[in-house]
Image 1 (cartoon, rainbow, N blue to C red):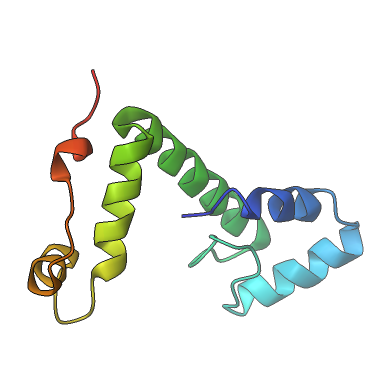
Image 2 (image 1 turned 135 degrees about the horizontal axis):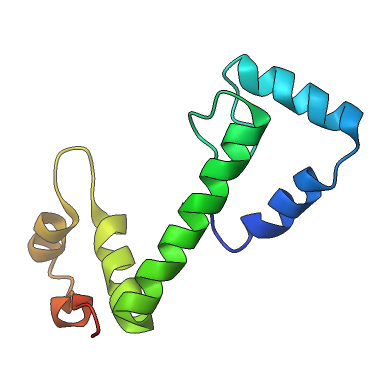
Length: 106
């Protein structure tokens, strides 16, 4: 998901000179991620739209869950590895995760 820090970069890309946009677009068409959060976009425009959508999706989820639940979910996700889920690792290492805060607010 694009973070709040990526928003200024998205704005800079939107306002970049046409020549710079053409260069970024060519690099994106070669498979390079040129926009933070724009992974898998096949053009500059596609990467920009992907990044903006991911940012909006994360913000919506944060509003639904509330700040505390969103942070707890991030702690749990940050513990995950290729072998184990965040929940498994937290229980093995004795790290408390308050899943009651994960509830979507009505």
